[in-house]
Image 1 (spheres, rainbow, N blue to C red):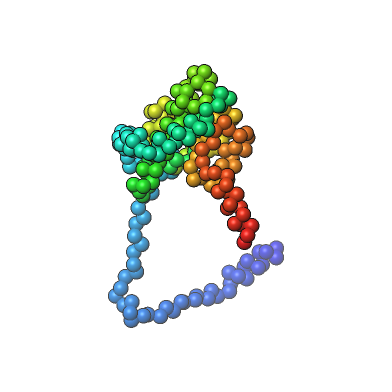
Image 2 (cartoon, rainbow, N blue to C red):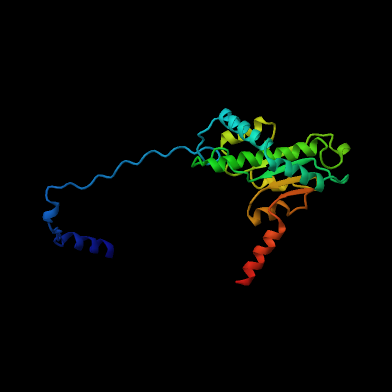
Length: 227
C-alpha cells in the first residue's frame, strides 16, 4: 500500500522541464561537425601473423643466388676447417639437427640484409648437416642414416614454411623445437637471446652446439654484476 501511495503522489506532482542552453560560437557558425573517416577493413592475418609478399619460387631463386655466394666464400672454407678440427672424433654422433631463429626469408620491411642473413645462415646450417651426414665429421660408419632437420622460427611466413618443407625438412612451433633436442642433436642458433639458448639445452647437452660462445655470456654477466 505504501508503494501505491508513493506512486500516486509522484504522478500528481507537476513535472519540471529542464532546458539546456548552449552557447553559440561565432567560429563554428555555418560549419559542420567533422565526419569520422571510415575505418579500413582489417587485413586477415596469415597463420604466422605476417603478410607474405614473396612466393615460394621467388624465395627459392633468392636462396640459389645466396647459396652460390656462400659456396664460393672463405667463410665456408673456414667453417669446414673448424668442423674438421672439432668433430673428427669417433664418438661424435648426430642423428638430427635443430635450426633456431634464422629469421624470415621475406621480412616485413623487405630489408635486404635481413633476407641475406637468413639465407646465408640456412646455407651454413645445411653445409654442416651435409658434412656430418656425409662422414665429413665424426664417425663415418655412424652416419649412415640421413640427418633429420627441424626448423623453429616464429617469424616464418606460410611461404617460408612451404620453402623449408619443400626441401624435405620439418617446421616446428615453439617450444617443440626445444623439446626434440637430445644427446644426438646438432643445435644451430646464431645471435639469439640467452633465454633461448637456455631452453635449447635445458633437457640435455646436445652433441654439437653452434651459436654465441659461453665466454660472451659470461662477460655479459660480469658486466651486469659490475653495475
